[in-house]
Length: 283
Image (tube, rainbow, N blue to C red; front, side, top):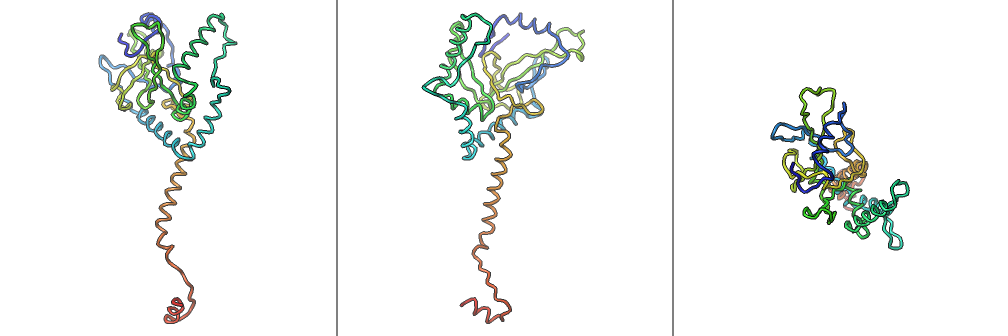
């Protein structure tokens, strides 16, 4: 098995065998809007017939355009200022392990690792930007970088990834047992991430395949009605923002088209004859 830019905890063979032994009649819930593709022989081409990747990238671009507008930026700043609060130079977030039924030594290790992650993200200085980026885009991707020769050193760097260039993919694994009923038992799946520097296109065969463990993916939790696209918290404001833009454009067109009429003076001359009416206008 080839693992690109990633690592896995435990033995891959045991995990694969364990996954094969677990059978169900329904597919797993798609809570993260991963794209489901089917395995096709030796060479597989994953074609997104619904164009969900293209729509998702366009949605993120629209969210960012909304955030750049004066009205949208003021509203987002108010929300982020209420969410990220720093008092007396303390960290805006902390981890609570009061209800965790583990020894104190384990809790101490978890707290130390949590603080280390905050240092890698420079969270005390960049918390505002990180939260705003998540709130606008509706998702965050981070690449967990380690030293492959010294994996015990742990995560050395967290690098942000543009969500328009990466997509989570869930590939259907064909059953090895041909005698197993296909209709009654749902197929098993293998998850990975697909990265393309030029952006995720409809042809999901283009790009770098990245192991699931090397990417941290956090989304807004809001999914469309078909469970195919993650939506941002700004999605409900898109309609109002578009209506405001259309109204501004229509007012500009209206005022330009009516501009010549503003230079015309209408004077009521009543039933005066032509000569007297012209003299009245001159006066």
